[in-house]
Amino acid sequence: MADVTRRKLMAGLAASAAAGMAATGAGCAKGDKKLRAFKNEEFYDADGTFNQDAAKRAYYELMEYHGYPVYDSLKEVLWVLDFAVGRFTDVGMGGVFWLNEWVEEGKYGYLGHEIFLLPGQMIPEHWHVQHEDIPPKMEGWHCRYGEVFLFAEGDPSPDAEKIIPASELKFTTCRNVQRLAPGEVGKLAVPLAPHFQVAGPEGEIVTEYASYHSMDALRFRNPDIKLD
Image 1: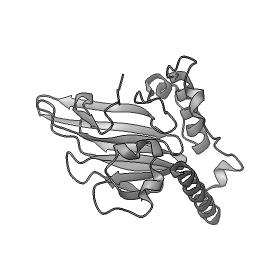
Image 2 (image 1 turned 90 degrees about the horizontal axis):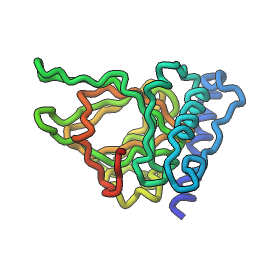
Image 3 (image 1 turned 45 degrees about the horizontal axis):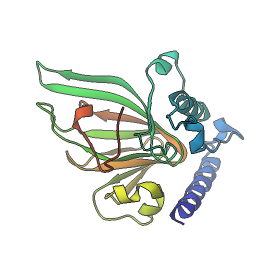
Image 4 (image 1 turned 45 degrees about the vertical axis):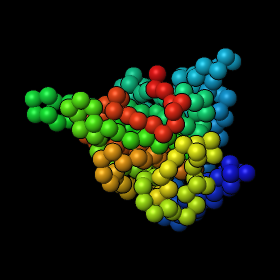
């Protein structure tokens, strides 16, 4: 029942977004194109192995739908994750680390990261701890295309649980939601704070600005998550 409610909410958001773009003329570039519905089974082989090539093709479809340039250099560095939970259309992501540098001499670091999510797809709830001499990561998110829902600590937002995939509700604590449309920016309030994001009905392409990212500093709420 929760998943049915979520689909209805996403459908309503998609209709609202389409109406808004039609009113402003922002949707003209897409014409009559529609982003197809992705099925979870298309991303797994018969033995249950995650098919990374299929996942990358889906993100290329997302990019082409939004008019995001698919450079050959991007194809060389795009990585995809299903976080080892087997529900890629619920929990997964594509990403590119354009820059991720830690400079020992000055003890500082920086990250330039592109995030790609299919419609309704979620990066699971997580936080970043101190790792050795690298401080907890701070980050901000700049919505480029589509729509993103940022979840953080704070007062619960109406309908927050309807946006989260039903399979992940028990692995989340954040219920404060900030919606970002293209051109809008949100940020992490404080270091160590748990957070996650869910894509809107047309997916999302988001640029992340952040301090250095260490995989060893990541902590996930869902104990079954793996990154390899």
